[in-house]
Image 1 (cartoon, rainbow, N blue to C red):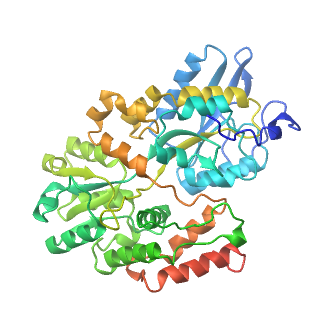
Image 2: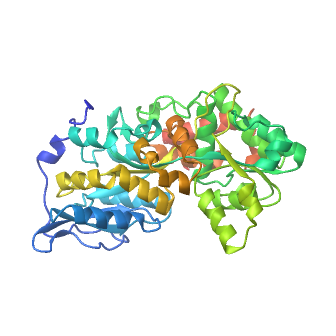
Image 3: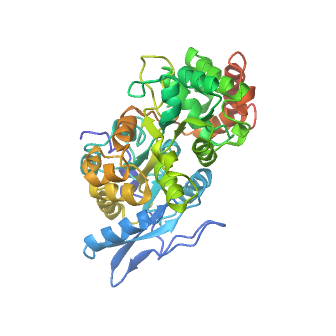
Length: 442
């Protein structure tokens, strides 16, 4: 597909030192499930996976069988927390661990791993085969400096969930886009609560970024620049508007008393209750609510009252930019079998595997072709909205210094009731800039 994917191939071709059987693992990290040739010379590829309901292990077994003895994929579980996943991957790669054959990587952490050459280049033929029909948002999250450095596997996004009864009482036509101001007004008039994530965690960065991007701005204006030259866009009109929305929801109590510690799960519980109205959250909401009804902890009337739409607009008539999440697959630069690893990745990300993974684990495909399977709509009737959301989705700031920016935002924009559009954008921009320049510590 003409992607400039050859710039770092020379880093793999020369100077690689092979350990005898397995690389020495870093202190405190998990034990490997296996490495090196096994089963009479069959190469074993280790796939570091994020926790799920067993879907990645099932795909690994399927692709192992389809490989016909060319390789065997074994999985090694990463920590549950995304920050801990990042730390473990970065430490192993920096140490030259040659067991890093395939890695499930959260999109915000990709530049940090790509910039120092920790990732093996994606061959042009693999790029062509694995990105055809990939949704725009997912593809954007898999690149660094306009180069495909990882392969999209599954993508995630937040959509707007709403209680039909509340929307109807507010006179909102949910077949048309709605704005944050409309949602705040509806919740206020009906004495209902909004489901948002106000905890000082990654979810706060997700919310801030989606608001700023939806308002036409960017948290980071020059993401490829070195740390001391990075320019933040928090004081822009878009940044100030994002602070107004978050601050209003917090100050007026529209997110409930638990907003300062609200996560995706707690906001779902709020939404399912009598005070629920509108909520921004991920697709797991649907199977989780169905499970509640089946278990008898929720009434059938709750699921019957739930609708869905695209993420709210900041300005009426302007496209929204929903959050982008998910997992991309990368290959370690020191892997002993990069060619086999990419061959395995081609199998893993096949549309039919993405479809099955969505149905069984609730993680949406990054490939638009996968959504054509009727089984998806049967299991997730909002699949079309999810796909449309992923076309519009915007990644969080793509920079090797993402951790500093995200942590700084979480510190300065929490709790929501203390976010002031006249103060917070400027103070947070000054603080994060000082951190990036080494003048302050997080």
